[in-house]
Amino acid sequence: MQRPPRWNGGWVWVLGLAGATGVSGCMRTVQSSETSIPGVAAPAVRSDPTNPIGAVTGTAAVQGFLKAAKAQDLQTMSAIWGTTKGAARDQMKRDDLEKRLIIMQCTLTHDRWGFLDDRPRLQTGGRQEFQIELFQGERSAKTSILTVSGPDGRWFVEDINLLPLKEFCR
Image 1: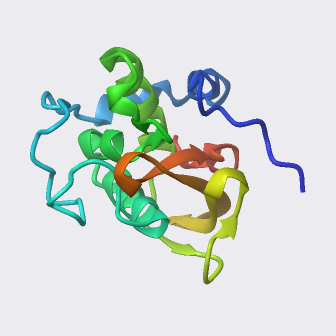
Image 2: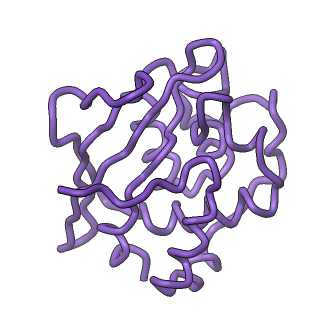
């Protein structure tokens, strides 16, 4: 199975998906936090209150990111989404960051989800790829989430294959 091209690094792909899938209606239901400043105390969704950036493991990054997406918690999503350089919110303009997070949040809307494998697939550069299945009402879709270790050994969600989830954001 061939994997679609990644959008990490440029992060422009998410905006292209918005136009292709017509997810603009999703933006009405998401409330943005006004405190997306690094160093602000972590919301209750986070599993590691001592460090509000990233997660302790790749598994925790996936769990925290999906929990935040379900809760429409853009601040927590911004603290867990990133690259080997750290959180995306420390690397992007706020407007661009919020647009991408809103699209991901809408696309990742789910009632429940689960890991498909007991452990992640190891990828180049120490990345971990998790196979998951999301459920929304009668719908279900399988996709992958790639995590990467960043500064201070913290883990970030680097890439999400959103194409199989395009029907989730309606």
